[in-house]
Amino acid sequence: MLTTALGHSRLLARPGDRRLCLLDAGASALWDLQATGLTPADLTELLVARFALPPEQARTQVAALMNDWRHAGLLDADEAAANWRLGAPDDPVWPAPRPRPLEPAAWALQVADRRVGLSAEDATVRRHLNALLVPATRVGEPCEVDHALQLRGSTKAWQLALEGAPLEQGQGLDAALIATLATLTELGCRPAERLIVLHGAGLVTADGRGLLLVAPGGSGKTTLAAALEASGYGLLSDDVVPVGWDGALWGLGLPLCLKPGSWPVLTARRPTLARMPTRHRFGTEVRFLPALHPRPVRAASVGALFLSQYRPDAPPECVPIGPEQALRGLIEAESVLRDLTQEKLDALARWISAIAAYRLQYPDLDQAHALIETRLRPQAPPRRPSDHR
Image (cartoon, rainbow, N blue to C red):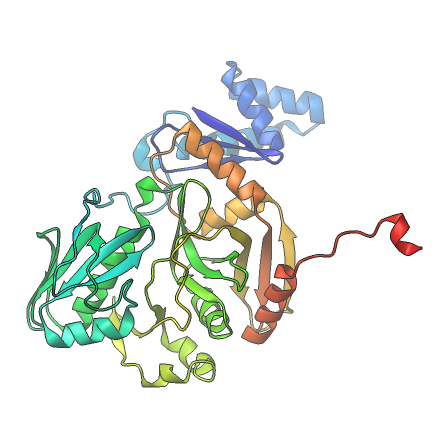
């Protein structure tokens, strides 16, 4: 069993797994006792004797803990019963990077820490992709890339291939664009090689600090990220952010993907949004909006993490939270872990413990921006007694 401390709590996981179990101080103590061989009945008697709990309440608490541990796979329960799973059960296996010259008809893209050559045979598809993506080099400039992604055929019938091997095929311009952007996202994330892949938006401040907005889907984080990007922040990604083993954030270099609910509130900040074509993505209308401020090529260290939630009828607030609450927020937002080891678990605990984390609630974008700016503002050091003379 893998285990590491996190504040007053403890993280548990099974080697090679993708699930975490976060125990508070009380549950950690009971975990240690059951590991020595104490039965649920023994633990119940202990709670009754030490804390004067009614026997039925003690039995209920112990049974709930045991049930959670079984569902987390910590007590060798049936894997099919696990409900702590993070991310999809089956990930594609991407080929290792193999530097090669950029093809003459392709353009180079910087996707996280890898360079991808992208080519499209159809002129219409090529024009629309060019409008959304920022080249890593000048057009026509020779360079080497780690991967080669090819979109073959026309909008009537296309095939997407990586290193010459078919990945996906379909029909229609929208489907071709969306499949290409999704593949670039997967190439940049590669969860098995990362410390964690966050389900959230990533930005960079003017002084180079990384800013994370983490929340489940539909919480408004992409709209807030687009508003912050329009105000001058650099965009890393609007949906998923890969975190390296050193804790740094990588940008994907892809456009914002905005749903209809965000169009009216963002048009004043990004007037070009109203002129962007509407695409159909997984049954939902969206508009892709290129980044105003390209993200830095180098990774960014985390300046602050915000568990954000748009609540139009609630007062604005931004309160500090501890590492346990921050990690729970990452889990609830379905961030992705892969191939857990003791080294990775320890690194994850160190990373989340070192981050300034906040729970952000906001009724509108202007107030969210103001709250974030306040938290990012450097704090003056406390004045020494001699300073008052």
